[in-house]
Image (tube, rainbow, N blue to C red; front, side):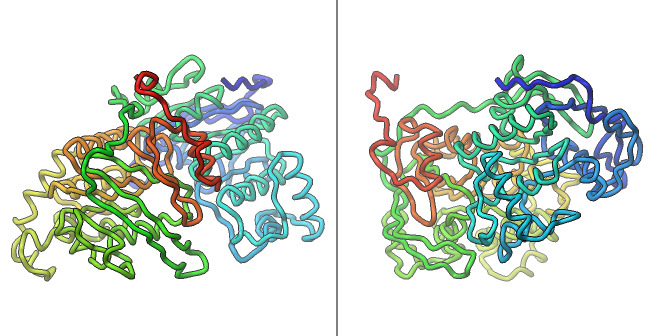
Length: 526
């Protein structure tokens, strides 16, 4: 466990911090303190108030009530510039970099008193060497990997000589090896007296890295724990306020003796823009009742592959994708749905659901030919009851929390909208399910329900393709695992024969080889 030396005096204190948006109370009299040199986690479900709280720390929002104390003095943090002047820096979950500019130019834009580019490049080289964050200040950001881009974001903060560094989901785009390097940097920062406020949904990281964890639920501080004396299950249950139906890593072998339900053969696709990724001779198959996990860092061809699998991009030849031995590579998404192939895309808003339409109308959009036999949206207006009962069943069966019986999709939280989308895809008893990032940005309770649904679906014989950046999710659900890197897919291997380190090497670009396989006898597996 990470043990960080601190001088035990609070660097930052929050007393009774309250923030409302209309009738919604995002932070309700929150008390909080972080010591100098501590690595302190801030945990909570989506909607618990974490983002609102750190935005007030960084001057993006102002509290309605309460007081911040900085190094013993009451302060008002009026803007990000004021926060930076105090010594507060933040690395956001979503990068704010300009691909066409160099590393040095991007960092200069974030500094209030930036030196010349030559001087700044020298400082970047010195800092990158000191902190073990190797980066060339002259390289265009558009040429950097996702992990390298995060180094730029961190260096941009470190050059401000922060006293408090806020990290929001910093490892969501990193391999396990890159995550470990990041942890080394954070531990070194803490050793030198910088406090680190660490926000993450990966509780195993919190256990390994942090000395304390504050947990928010419903906008309130419900307690502080010492991770070394707690457990991931206990922290998760504290976050949701009830017992969590925990999912352990799958221990069964790949169901390779079951019939093949879906096969992709020699699929290549050129990049259609400067920021797209070409697919290179991808081949794999999926058996009935198995979950094939496709891991990889975002931007390595996941979007392009998903579009090909779902029919949003049509293959040059129909026989490059086969479903139950039928060539479907030229079939549209709706034609594939008629064959009992369902899809859950990564982007909920605008892709999986139309936010300005009701849930009933969103049900109708993906299943109109089943309920009306016609393809015109206005038939929905004349036959609303055809989808109302189905939508009501989805809401009930999947615990979708709604403000009333038929809200607009935009009125649901991200987790509840995802539960609705998942439930909608299950109403036709699919034989193949393609899901991309099914639990991205959803809380522990919703994620557990979604994962349980996928496991139950596989148990019924449905083949599932799970495309995810979350290795914990990949290992807890998959029977076989392949890795997508720079548009190349590694050969699928049994999940029980792989470690997170193996998958991390493949995510980082290592070639698949026998050295990454760890075959075990039946006795060893038992």
